[in-house]
Image 1 (cartoon, rainbow, N blue to C red):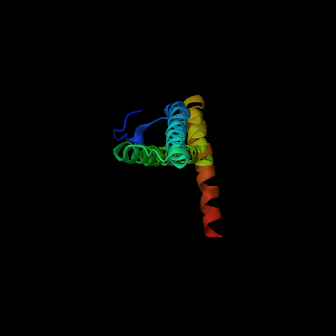
Image 2 (image 1 turned 180 degrees about the vertical axis):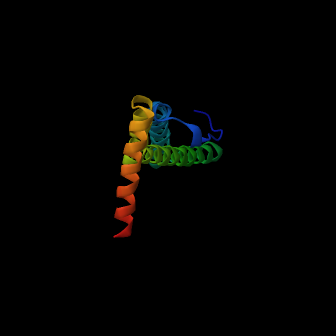
Image 3 (image 1 turned 135 degrees about the vertical axis):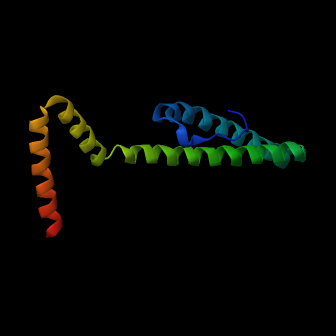
Amino acid sequence: MGSHSIDVSNLTREQILDMLPQLTAEMDEIRTQIEDAKAKAAATGDYADREWFRRAKYALRAKGRLHQQLQYRLGTLRKQKSPQSMAQHFIDVARETLSSDQFHRILQTAMGRANCDSDS
């Protein structure tokens, strides 16, 4: 995963689930390198190159932001699998399976019940 910006808005659940473990491993590796550099500096007084340290911290922040965006997108995708979308799938299957007359009778009954519910 490069440092370039990734548009997560069109990623599928499967793509996100494929990306998250790799991203987490990359973040862990950067954290380990930073901690090793800090430990070396504390033990020997030999500090890491400032530019390297700055780039490492930036990479960790950028990957952290991407991780948050992926998690948010995953949550959005989960919410889309709501009972409402299940209802839409049911309607689509009923429309394909039932005769037109049967479908419309059931639809009218359901609409009548929905109107009665909204009146109360």
